[in-house]
Image: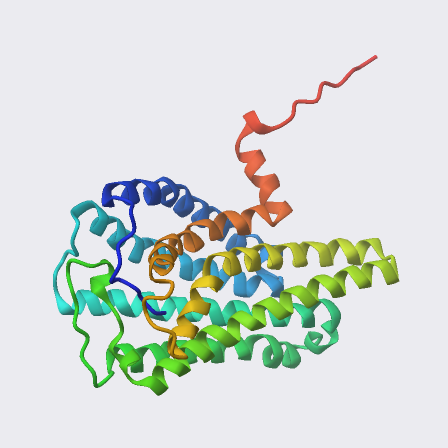
Length: 309
């Protein structure tokens, strides 16, 4: 993920601190709530279409409990603390590794959703399930881990950290190697994002066509839940990250850095809300969780009076 830190946005640090904190605390609570129900509800836990979502929520929670605390501390103090190379390298690694992992895993989820809805026979046996469903997730996780370790932690280049900038002013040094930079943007940004766009749109069209052609209410209800869950997260991801990603790609293609400079500064800041809003989107797109939330708050339930003879 590229960083544009040369331009500051016209929002004071203390205001940024509070507008992030305003969403941060409810987001962490919602993350624990949603993950608890995903992990301890057998039906939700065993549903194949929830497996990637569980991993995404778990990664997102780690980011909220590490990177977001450091971000809030930076906006509170006005500088990075502690001011050590190892801390900044850790922050950069978490930021890079989890962003790449989230993007690639969700891209796979949008593609796999077609298999789970329209070609469920491909995962009908244990071996097919392991090969089609589990193996791709494992391979993507291993790729993201090893790629991030190689380019961030054991890269031969040395990062020049600035403790007065967010994420230590981290413009990853491997971006100075054009081949590595192109690989990162194209393979880890462009291709996954295009996969999300294409698979999400085609999924919506196929589900609508399937409903009108087959008129099977039970299947439609199941497909609708799976489709709404995926499309809700897709819209959040594309709205938050896609414009910024396109500018990053154009810059690597030769567009001057001053083009979209102010936009990138704001985009980097508001990209935090992709993490903060993810738990709410996941909870809101699942009817089971919404019902349990209402049960947790009796004041929100409708009281129905029973008339007896």
